[in-house]
Image 1 (cartoon, one colour):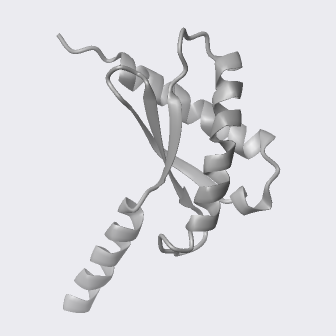
Image 2: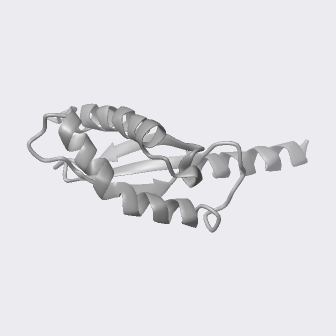
Length: 115
């Protein structure tokens, strides 16, 4: 019997990480960050937080600066979440750039070129 607990935790983490990054982090490089998804492992030890940057069409190299900042902030975000959510163990947070939006934009351009 599969549990939907990781999915519930992922939804909760998505909400809380978004709030923390938008309201409590004052770094201007993270002003346009949008959390697109959170995937939690079955044992709830790791949470992969996928993000994109609003307003810019960027590639992975340009997102490296934001990714470095997010990696440095992951411990602080985890600490804040542990105070907000009553859990025995808060998962380790790993930020990843969401490439799916860039991929879908590329496919859309290719389809327009065919027509």
